[in-house]
Image (cartoon, rainbow, N blue to C red; front, side, top):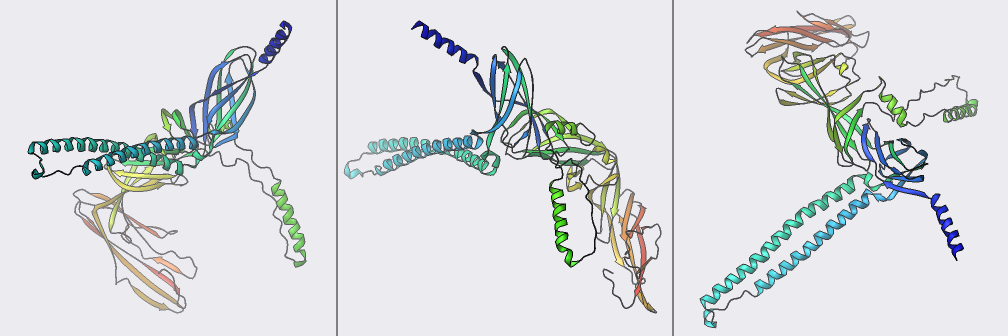
Amino acid sequence: MKLLFSIALLSSLHTFSFAQYQKNATPNIERVTVFLNQAQIESSYAGNLTAGSTKIVLDNIANTIDPNSIQVGGQGDFTLLGVKYKPNFLNAKASVLKDSIDMVKSDIENLDMLLNVALNEERMIMANASIKSEKDGVLPEDLKEMIEFFRTKLTEVGARKLQITRQIEPLKDKKARLEKQLSQDPSLRMPLGQIELSVSAVKNTNAKISITYIARNAGWSPNYDIRVKDTNSPVNLTYKASVYQNTGIDWKNVKLSLSTSNPSQSGQKPEVYPQYLSFYQPNMMRAMRKSEEGVAMALESAPIADMATAANIVEMVETSMSVNFQIQVPYNILSGVGPELVEVRNYTANAAYNNIAAPKYDNASFLTADILEWEKLKLLSGEANVYFMEKFLGKTYINESSVDNKLTVSLGRDNGINTKREELEKYKSRKTFGSNVKESFGYKITIKNTKNVAVDLIVEDQVPVSQDSDIEVSFDGSEGATLDAATGKLKWTINLAPGASKEIEFGYTVKYPKDKRINNL
C-alpha cells in the first residue's frame, strides 16, 4: 500500500511540474493614438510569473481590433512563446447592459406593486369614510376624532405614494437611457476580445508586458474657433478635435495623441500597365476579349499592399508626412456615447483686415480678415466658428488643399458703409456693323461712408469673359480700376473720409455675329 501511495505521489508531482498555469487579467490602457479613422491602443500588464509555462489571458480588448496588428513587448526573465486573439462571448457589453436593464426593470416593477398597494389602501380608507348624522348618534366629538383619523391615514398613504413615484421616475429615465445606448451603439452587440499570451519562465519572476494593437471605429475630425477682438488685433485660432470611438471599451484617464496620418490608405505605389491601341475589327472581338481577360488576370495577380501594422504606423507618424499632437492632459473617451471635444492648440496669426463690397450682388459692405501664411499652421480641412468682438458670426470652411498663402474669413456685414449699383442709360446701346452687332452696357456704383472715421474699401464688380473667338469683349475703362482678364473681375481700392461719398462708373462692349444669340449677356 505504501508503494502504491509513493508512485501516485510521484506521478502527481510529475504532472504538477509540467502543468500550465493560467492568469486572467485586464490590461491597463495607458496611451491611445487616434488617427483620422483608426486608433492605436497601448496597454500594459504587470504581475508575477511562476516557474514553468503560464497562459496569461488578457480581457477587455476592443471588439473592433485588427488581430494582425497585435504587438507584444515585455521586461522580465521570461520567454514569450505565442500570441493568440479570440472573441470572448461571455464578456459582451450588451449582456452587461441587458442585465442592468433587467435589474432596473425589476426595481420599477417592485415599486409599481408598492404603489398599487398604496392606491388600494387609499380606496379602502375612502370607502369607509361615510359619516352618519347626529340623528344616528354621532356626536361632534366623535366626528372630530374620525376626521383626525382619516387625515392621518390619508396623509400617510399620500406621502408613501409620493415617495414611490419619486423613486420610479429616475429609474424609468435610467432604463430609457440604457435602452437607447444599447440600440444606438452597434459595437456593444459585439463580444469583447481576449489576447492569450503563452509565456515560459525558468524561475519565479516579475513581468511587465506591453500590448499594442489597432482598433477600427475610432477617429477624429478637426474644427476651429476663429476669434478677432478688433481690426487692430491679430487673429486667435483655436484648433480643436472631435474625437469619437465605438470600440466597445472605455478609454479612461489615458494619454491621448492625435495623428493626421491615415493608416487605412494604401501605401503601395500603383502599377502602370501597358495601354495597347489597335483598330477596331469585328472578327477580332474574341481575341480582344482574351486580351482583356489576360489584363484582368494580371491585375488580380498584381501585388496587394500589406496590411498596416502598428510598427509601420508609428514610423509614419514620426515622419514629416504627418503631424502628431501629444495631448498633455489625460482624457476619458467613452465608447458609443458621442464625440468628445479635445482642445489641441491655440495659434495667434497676423491678419490683414479689409472692407469689401460687391454691389452687383449685395448693397452691404463686408469686413474680412486675411490670415497670412496660414499653411504654416498645418491645419486640416474642417469647419470653423467665426467670432468678432465676442459675437458669433457664423461658420466658414478651412480648405487645407488651397494653394493661396492667405485664408480669407468673412467677419460679417459692416452697416456703416452703404453701396448702390444702377444701370446707366447713356452707355446702353445696340448697333449693327456689317455682319456683327455691338452691344454696350454701363453702370454706376455709389458708395457712402456713414462712419465718423475714414475707411479703406475694396469694391468688386465684373465684365463678361468670352469663351469663343467670335465674341469680343472690350472694357471701356474706369479710373482706378484693375481688370483680371482671365476672370473679368474688376477691383477698385478707394479711401473714404468720414461721411464722404464716391461714385464709380464703368462700361463694356460686346461684339458678336448678328445671326447668333449669346447666353448670359
